[in-house]
Length: 352
Image (cartoon, rainbow, N blue to C red; front, side):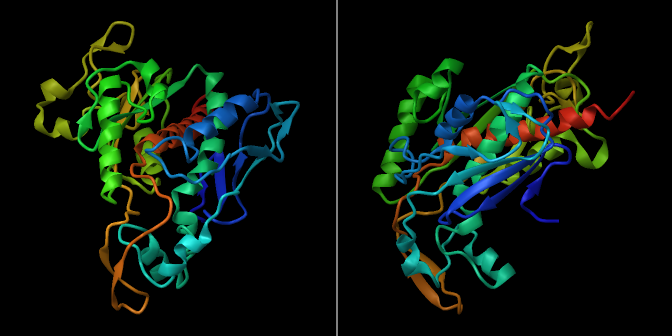
């Protein structure tokens, strides 16, 4: 099965390369009758698009989505929805000097080892640009989940070691760092700017909170809800770790501290589990955290090898994000939405 297909009932296939003519997605399994909000779709794309601030790449793409099928009079018809995002600002020449050199921290070597050929123009399918198709598909998933009163919110909780201490959800989309703490956001932006001035980059931590999920979503054993969410998040190129609820901190707790006592009305006194037990939602908020690595494209000189295995020095030029954390946030929400839309439909098959 192709690695470009995700989901079982709500199924998403993406296509296209960073510097090709276009990227896009086919969304199959969207129920008929869902209102397709084109303004919301394009606003979601604007959240991910490049050129937003000094914290992002200067590549200029409008990322307008063309809906080619599956929608009639702004309502889903139940047939596959084809989404197309055309590339307009390719600078393929930026990569001509590294056509035979592997970039440290990138997928170059892995793709070459697997296929014997690689797209040197920004990494092709391995580029973060591929995620624009995921955001488009995720926007459709969010439209479906809205009918079920499900809400997904992600934010930067840490960038370059600067941690958010306050939480104002209204602040997240007000600053380039997408941080709910205004003071911390300014320090995050400065840290990214300092790294860029040195030709370097920074990483960070993203938190995601999902409300409105009823108890019972998720499949036993091999298709647990947290397992699929982890699968979705780790499919993002910059994500190197994930934890749910207390996560790794739970390893230092006792059972009496880590268990979430149940209260009348089938609610919980705490949420150390992050809203999922046994791979199935509990009805509490789903809470997970991901680690995002520093952008591998940096202009500092690095050691590497060429395709013949010979030692080389490399300095990467072009337009690159000094920190991908703010732009990965709408992608995190999109992938979570795709997973949850799939499980919402799967759950309708679980009992009479």
